[in-house]
Image (cartoon, rainbow, N blue to C red; front, side, top):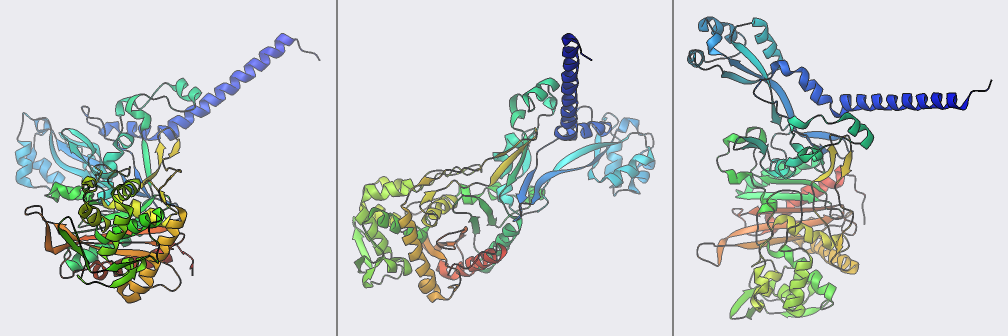
Length: 570
C-alpha cells in the first residue's frame, strides 16, 4: 500500500515530537531527582521551617583516599531546634514536666522564658536528633514548636583544620571564615532564592541556566589523603610535645604536580567547636600566611643556581677560612671553624655558610637575584588558600654583598613555607615550577565536574641541574646526616636540614638562643613521588634541626614508601 507524502510527513512529525517530549520528560526527571533532589527533599521538610527564615544550605568538601574513594571532610548535619511561644503556654509547670522527661532542661531558666508573655519565640535547645524531636512532637503540647536546622559538621574533627577553616558569622552572614571554606565560599555557598530556573532553558542548553552567584555552586574534592594527613598530624603533635615548640608544621606534596596530600600545624583546633579558641590568630594557616627566615634548606637552591649558571660544579673547590667579612660585617660557619680546601659537596654535607656565600658571589648580585625570583621566592605561589603572603626579599635589592651572602644560606630574607616547598620541589622534578594546590575538582550542581589542576609548568632549571643537585643531596643523607645513620639502602632520599636564627623585632639583630628548625626531602630522589617539609619554631633544649626533625622526617618517609608501595630505586 502506498501512503500519500503528506500523510508520511505528518507521521514523521508526530514521531519527532513524541521523541522530543520523551527527551524533555527524561531530562526533567533528571533535573528533579538528581540536580534538584535536595531542594525538593528540603521542601518536604518545610513543615518544620520557621516562616521568617530560609533553611541554611552549603556545599560539601571531600578528602580523597589513595584509591580515589571520597571521604567527607565538611558536610551538613540536620536536627531540630526546640522553641516555645510563651503566649500560648497556659501551664508552664506542666509543660516543663512533660518536656523534661525527654530532654534535660533547667527548670528556673525554662520558667523565666515561659513567663515572657510578650515574646512569641524563646529557644530551649538546639541540634536535637530526629528521634528526640519525634518524642517531643508526640506530646502535642500547646506553644511548643520544633524547627528543622542544619549546621556545618567536620567528621574528622581537628584533621586538616587549618586547611579546611570553618563556617562562622561575619556580622549577620554565615559564611566561610578561613581555609578552603573561605577561598571557595562562592562555590560552597547557596542562594536559596534561585534554586529553580527555566525548565526549557535547562534542557535545550544541556546545562542548568543560571545567573549570578549560583553559576558556580557545587562541592569541592581535595587531594588531601586522610590517612596521610592523620600520620603527619600525629607526628607534628609528638614533635611539639617533645620539644615544647611554639609551633610546628608540615607539608606533604607531589613535587611534579603540586598536589598536596597533607598540610598541618600543631597546636591545632577542632572546627566543630572553635568558639573556645580565644586567640583568633590561632586559626590562620602559617604555612601559607606566615613568613620565616628558613636557614640552610636554601643552600641547595643557591648551589643549584650556581650549577645551572655554570659557575660551580659539585667538585669545584674553595678555601674555607671559617668566616668571611663583607661591608664591615662578618659571617661565619655554624661552628666558626674553617675546613681549608673543600669542594661544593662538602658545602652541603657540612652546611658551610662560607661555601654558600662563595657560590652567591660567583653568581653576582643580579644573577643570584634573578634565580631566586625565577624560583618564585618573594611572590605568591597561587595556592588555593586565602591570605597567602608573598615573602620578604627586599634585602636582595640592597646592592651590598653582605645581604647577598646571608640570603644564600637563608638568613635576611623571609619566605612562606609553601613558597619554600615549591622552590625546593624544582630541585627534584626536573627543574619545573609547579602550582601548589589542594582542590583537584569541582562538582557543580548541574552535574558537571571540572578538573582545576594545571597541566603546564614553568621551567626554571636545566634537567641536568636537577639531577646533579639531587645526587649531591642524596650523598648528604647517605653519608653526612647524623653520620649516615638514616641512609635507606633500597631507596634514595635527597634531603637537607636548616637551622636559622630568629630575628629580634625589638632590638634588631638576632636572638642567640632562639631558632627555627626546618627540614625538607624528596624521594625517590631521581623520580620523586613526594616532597616532605617540616619546621619547628623555637624548639627547646636542642640547637640543631638534624636532632629534632630527622627522625620525624624519616618516619613519614618510611610510612609513605610502605603506604603507597613505592618500589626500591637502588
